[in-house]
Length: 68
Image (cartoon, rainbow, N blue to C red; front, side):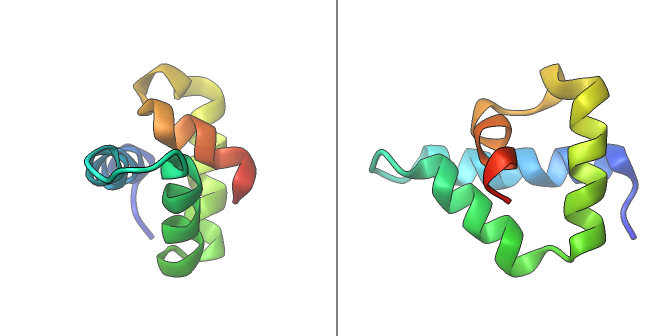
């Protein structure tokens, strides 16, 4: 399992990629990526970390969290 700080960094890297992709559904694509490639524990850990360190998350990650 990844450390919470590493999870934040990894999620932000995913968001950076999707910022470069056209379309209005960038947050949905971030959520889809997290659902497809991250296990349930990783997603739960990211959500828990987001509660205390939301300001460290890219806006697309913050928008994607309710969708996962």
